[in-house]
Image 1 (cartoon, rainbow, N blue to C red):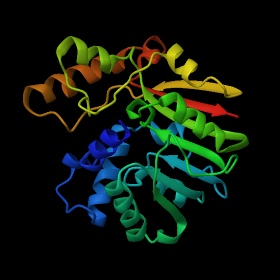
Image 2: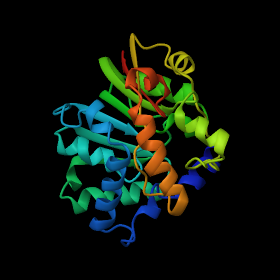
Image 3: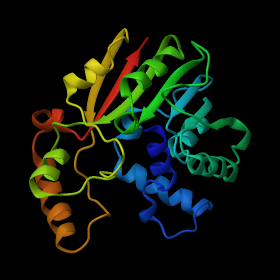
Length: 252
C-alpha cells in the first residue's frame, strides 16, 4: 500500500491545474502559493507561520514546500519529509529559488516510520496528510514520538460531517484526489479518538465556502454566485461544526 501511495503522489502535483507556468520555476511556485492561500484563506489566521522562530519544526507530507517556506521565513528551523521523490525535488527547488536553500532539511521518507530520534522536534505539522496515509494512527503516534515534552502537533483532516462532503454526496460534486489509494474522512469524535495519547487536544473546524477558480460556466455561477453567499450569510456559530477541514492543535 505504501508503494501505491508513493506512486500516486509522485505522479501528481497538488493544484497543478491552477498554473500555466513551467514546473519548477519561481512563478510556478508563486502561483501555487497564491492559489493555496486564496482557497485556504483561514490558514494564516489559525496557524501563525511567524510564531515558531528558533523552534525545530517538522512537516510530514511537505509536498513542494509551500507551507514549509512560510515557516522558514518566520525563523523556524525546518525539516520536511515526503514519500514522493518528485515532491522533495520540487521542494528543494522552491527553497533554492527563494534564497532559503541552506535553511531546510528535505528528505524522502515515510511519516508512519519517521527517521528521527524521540523528542527531536518542538513542532510537528501535517496538513491534509493523515487522510491519505495507510495507517493514520501510526503516523499520529510517530508525530507524537518525535515531539519534545510540551511540544505542539498540528494536523488537518477532512470532516465527514461537513458542507462539502454533503454537497459531494447529494450533488455528485467530485472531491480532490478522490481516486487516491487511501482517502478517509472523520467526524469530530472520530478525529479526537485518532489523536488519543496527547495531553491536550483542541479541534477547530475550518474552511467554509469561498469562491472557487476550479469551476466554470453554470457550475461557477451556481457555486460562486449563489451557494457561497447564501452559506456565509448564515451566522457562523450555527454552521461552525460543518467546516470541511478539521484542524487539531495537540500538546504532548
